[in-house]
Image 1 (cartoon, rainbow over the protein chains, first blue to last red):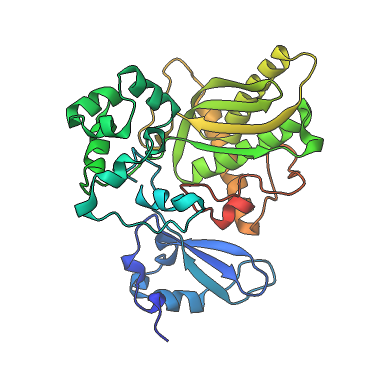
Image 2 (image 1 turned 135 degrees about the vertical axis):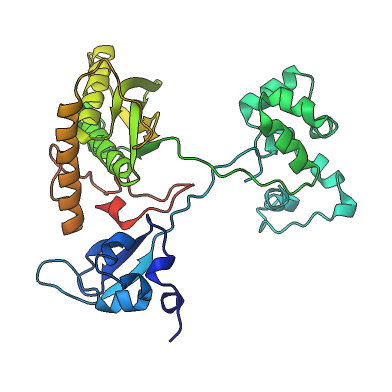
Length: 84
Length: 265
């Protein structure tokens, strides 16, 4: 199935972009960054769905399947002179 | 503005659907009250009245540079272009502060109860400050009390660790106690970390030789953050961690930010 995760590679992410990994069993959340994923060579070529499949929950004794979401880095602007 | 006008159409609360065609302009715009124009609040309206501008039509007839002069900044000129139909986009806003506020539950409206919630809110704000790689140089405390409000600021050396920031809160809270020795009822509390600078742009205080101490506290704060991130909740904090009844300490949807899961830990 096509989704945004099959179209974005790790190397497409900004350095400070964080990926939120939520466990489908226990709800525990941990975050991944590009630096963390690219600890080994050539991992920047992984697609995000591959990263999601290989990641497991980090809660002690869980190791459940996780759901990946991407955090928005941009902030919405405050109201500026009726123009925002 | 058209959407806003659409919400008030024909004496009912409308759906906000309102289209102003270029051929009809500026007649519908001129029917909008001066103070209903987004960007003209009470203070700006007062300033305009003092300058003899009482209606939207008078404002519309001004020159762009005149509006800039009235506003004392470029926002006035930008508003002129917006009113005259130009597609002016607001510049990207830069973060200026980190803060949280909360209405207090009835059992926490004493000085002690309010302090505890202010402390939790401040720890949450400090965590966000660190997560986004900022330092701050000021702390602002605001209380809503029976007779109005109380607020004060406290200067901090450029810091981002919990210990330094909570010490600032203690100093402000001593001020509250001194101002109200008989105690008071507090309905709402707000804390804001301001004067922020990126970690690589901060100016250290030459006269304050506490760098070693600060670095140790920063390491401690980092370790606490890492532990909380590992367990996905607050397992460690400076002082007790007892969220008030109803929760929602620093984890609400604001106008400019979508909270992340970490805000709810």
